[in-house]
Length: 390
Image 1 (cartoon, rainbow, N blue to C red):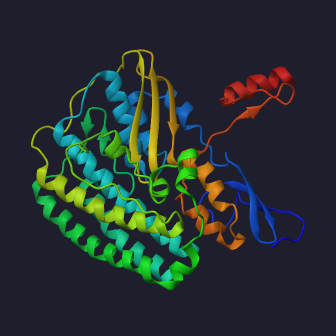
Image 2 (cartoon, rainbow, N blue to C red; image 1 turned 90 degrees about the vertical axis):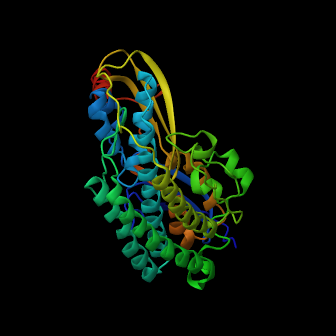
């Protein structure tokens, strides 16, 4: 339906549907979205420049704080990058522990997201149930690492904490409870009208568009594309553990819910296998403080999708350059495509459908208004340039 005029609606940076500040400018015809322009940068923290000012050991804890929900994914990606530059490999037992923690984190992240998705469509009963059960996995994290959010498990050369045999029955007991609950939630997602009416055929992303726009993670797999770094470019112990890459061909928000619910069940199977086949031996190897000159790229399958870390070393104890490409940044073009043709009322759940983490992805660029040249600058460089202009 068209009223013959386009209305522009700003969405954010502060909005009840956004858990972090970001801005989207929607152009609507009636209540149908005809265009969307994202404007990122409201949550930029200068993490990449901060990496260059700290030692490789200090940067482990900085990487963990890129994101609270996928903190282990970032430290796994970071430590793999530095281990590649050093030419060392984590011991077999450490690689299995990395898989266990990574999959527990996937369960934690996906269950958190399912609750938020329910909240965005007004299904707060499901939100509270899922977050109640999410406490189980957070308790497992606390038992293994001493922490519920930042687990501080990874280190360069392996892991800092072991999983002793007396913990394994407790982990398995928690997994049994989670499996029962997630099967129930999967059934609810596929049968409950409260969810179906708000998510089915909403936020459509066709397979060709998903590939062309470089979508990643559950967003891509919910469009029927079988792509997962764990299977395509195995790291840690994923090449030794059998698992299925979960896909769904619905191409809508409902499919993204189903994919995440099924991935949680698959993560439980992966953890069980890892616990039962975890080799004995050391959990870390000693590494030098200075890293030889070189550059490398590290990839992992974070809960939200493909996470990429780039590192360049110059032979000192600090990196010369470090860059992070988060899954959310990769999914922004696909998100804009999903929103087109939808109703204004569907914006919150479609946006939430990619499980955005703006703190992970945010970056800033500065444009010289005289030359139209664009730079990505540090604040010190910006101050110098500002003084020259004055």
